[in-house]
Image (cartoon, rainbow over the protein chains, first blue to last red):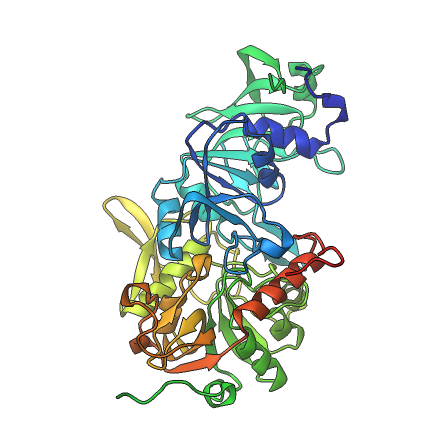
Length: 231
Length: 256
């Protein structure tokens, strides 16, 4: 099988494809909105995971056709979903209890910034002197999920690193991030803090990553190019 | 035989006046009491304090019309910008938000209000939401307590003068059945209101809803009002989802 051409992929697709490789068979998964949602498109065929929606569902499936859409079957972003065999509905108290109390194995969350201590910021920027727009369910997810993946573009529009030594934005979770996936690199956040560079986009060296990254990091012994071979 | 709780929209909604502290059920616009919200807009009931999970669904739907018409003065929620209308009202200074709660914290505060306890101890956001200057409109710093060596926020119960929830069907006793993901925390919201209204797709005779399918016992409900039929509700959401690009437009000639 030919490997999809990385050159032809958008940054969002690179991130989503790489995030999908962090998910293990059988896990309970919560995907945030935006790039994280795309992750579900790239899970290996035959992999069986349980998708969780904050509003109160385990085991939802793909978006329905327009005429099949049921306005009482929705995800946490008010999108129509379907319920797979084995799905379970619960109330909101139970759903958020599951999130705080460690029943969600893995979450992929978009981030404005992430730092080398694993702090993740995704709910607030300053607009008109006020913090905007709000945490929704993201703080609950960061608090209790066993493995938090931060998914973000490596640099902002002006080329500044979004992987920081220390983020000054209000946090969503303190030291919660386990893995950082960008369109250029993959880092592990070490348990004691600090980043380990595991992978880079094919063609980029560790020094290339250092040149576009504010955070300090060490390079893994088995540092390697990202691999999207689906075979 | 108890008196029927079925009321006309106006008979029930007259409880909501200018300045009322109002709680409504929904999850980002799903399972909103649509007819009751329309009544508020039609009757220009303003200066509301609105307690709700999120502001609603964006793009001119349901609760969004409340902010667009300047009817909400204060929002108690987890977010300010799930609707463009609430986001604009907040950023222009027309909508007061003293602090934002993680969604699970918001739900637990409502639950506390529902079940007669003073509040709950919440670990989420400690060391983050208590940072000085984050919420300048807070009169006092967030209260914390240490239990078993761990720090928690003391989050007070939330209650309202009027609560409005949305169910699938209800009987004249006020027993409510929900469909799928639309149960949310609607029962807690009903219990946390001094006066609780349920809007439903269908009003059915007593005995229709199996007792183990009652999601909100009628004891917690004061008024039952007829909302959109389920079919019309589906059509409203599908139309809006098509407008937002969340569903494909229906092909010419397709039958629903």
